[in-house]
Length: 329
Image (cartoon, rainbow, N blue to C red):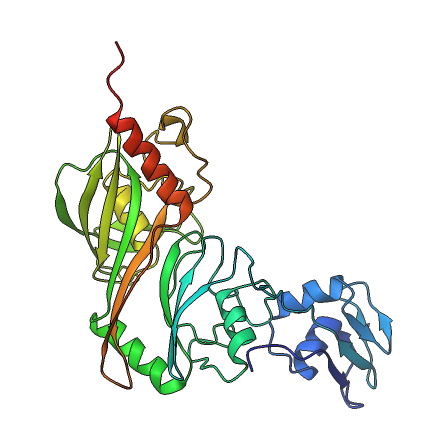
């Protein structure tokens, strides 16, 4: 199951000794969610003991007590919502979607009720989606960061999931991104071949490393300059590997961070460097532009493309207009 039932109910066995509410809930309710998430729900008044709301996770329960948990409802992405993915292709095996910026791919653990691509897939296709990467990731094959817009493929059944995962592992799936960056690269095109590892000083981020120690991984990104401006550039990017935050960390390592990226910044770059009157920038301006892979069932080569979203298109047009203006006297 990839969604939670409306209620969980259980009785503490007569032979069980008195103990903490959160531990008893973990042991007997079989909700599948983490102890920390249960603790949050207990504090929110979602778990009762014999019909009475308890104040916190450390409350004591006795043998014979009846526990009832009512999880919060999954947030629904309504049709027409700015967070609704655009469906570009679907059959009984897979679907290809265009993800809007601001929508996360999946929750942090089972029981996370935020709106995600995974929850939208469950809304659309039900609870039979493959959960090979965890119950919180139904249908999810690969990830885009929350603020990254663009194309991703999802699996609607297990054999398709396994085939697509193998294609990613074999590096036969072609992905192309576009990014607006600070600065202008020295070369028209080049490969960025820099290993990555978790950044111990910055939670959930990665850093470039020369280490081959355990935890470091090879990473390879090809870039090509599409347009040059005064202090900025539009790049085409083709990652050969698919490491976490790979493009963002690689571009930051060249001192060409992506405009709007709050985490992978370089030197003194910031939105204040943009010319006066620039369109609003509210996220990392990275877009998954194209995707090509072999259909796991038919063997057909499928290619999909996604237009630049309005925020990137508006800033690109603004920079293009600035570049065409005559020099001031």
